[in-house]
Amino acid sequence: MTLWFTVLLAAALAFALKLAGYLVPASTVEGPRRSRVISLLPVALLAGLLLTQTVGGDAGLTVDARVPAVAVAVALFALRVNFLVVVLVAAAVAAGLRALGWG
Amino acid sequence: MTTAAPEVSQAKRQALSVGLATGAYGVSFGALSVAAGFDVLQTQALSALLFTGGSQFAIVSVIGAGGNPVAAVATSTMLGVRNGLYALETSRVLGVRGLRRLAAAHVTIDESTAVGLAQATPEARRVGFWWTGLAVFAFWNLMTLAGALLGNALGDPRTWGLDAAAAAAFVGLLWPRLRSGLSVATAAVAALIALLVYSWTPAGVPVLLAALAALVIGLARPGEPEPPEPGHLDGEDPTP
Image (cartoon, rainbow over all chains, first blue to last red; front, side):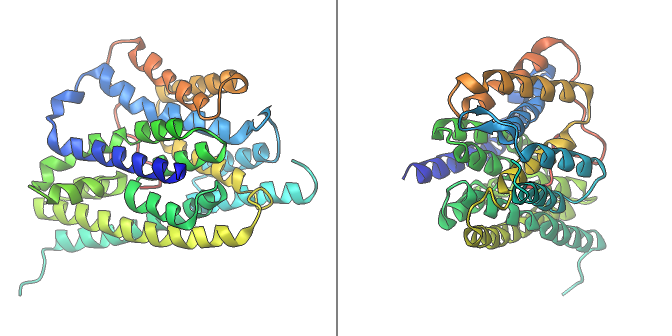
C-alpha cells in the first residue's frame, strides 16, 4: 500500500512539473543564480544517491564488493562504454567477488 | 499523397533509433526495481506514469535502502525539475493547445526535447519531439517489463550484484553532467555531506541533505549559469 502511494504521488508530482512548463511563463525560472541552482540540483542528488548506494548499509557505512564494482564502472564510463554494458559488468564484478567469498 | 519532406523523414529515423537505444536501458531499471521490493505491476507503473529515468532509479534506490516514502518522493521530484525546464522550451516549438498539452507534458523528457529541438524545420521539430517521446515510452516500458520478469527470476539480488548495478547506474546518470568545475565541486560536496550524515540520519535523508550542495554552490557567487555544451541539453543523461 505504502509503495503504491509512493509510486502514484511521485508520478503525479513529476507530471505536474512537466505540465507547469507548458502553462507558466519562462520568466519564473530566469536569473543566473536560480538557473545555476536548478542545473546543479541533479548533480548533487545523483552524487548523494551514488554514495549511499555504494557504501550504505543497514548498520552504517560498509565497504564491500560494491566499491570495486563502482570503480570499474567509473573507468568504463570514462572510456565511453555503453550504459547497459557498464551496469552489467558492475553487477558481474560484485557477483564474482561474492562468489569468491569477499564482500 | 505527397512524400514527406526529407527533414521530416530524418526526424522520424532519429526518433526511432533514439527510442530503441534509450528504451533498452529499461531492462536495468526493471530488474533493479523488483530487487528493491517493488512488484512487477508497481515497477511497470513507475515506467508508465513517472516516466523519467533518473527519478525512477532514485525512488527504487531510496526505498530499497529502507528509506521512507517521503524522502523517496522528494528526491524523485527534485530530479524531475529539469523536465519542467524542457517543457518551457518545447512549448514554444510545439504550439500544442488544450488536452494535447497533457500528452506533450507526459513525454517531455531528455530525448524528446533533444531530438525535437535539433531539427531544422518547424514540422520536423514537432515530428521529432512526438515520435521520440512515443518511441522511448514504448520501448522503455517494454524493456522495463522484461527486466522486472528477469529480476523476479533471479532470486537474491546481492548474489547477482544488483546492488552494485544500481550504484553503477548512478555513475552513468552522473557522468555526462560533470562537464564543468562547478558541477564536479557540487558532486564532491554532495557526496561528502551524504558520507558525514549517513550514520546518524534515517535512510533517504542523506540524499536530501546532499541536495544542499547545489544550493550552497549555486548561490555562492554571482555570474553566469552553467552553459550547456553545444549539441547537448543542459544535464541530459542516458535514460529518459
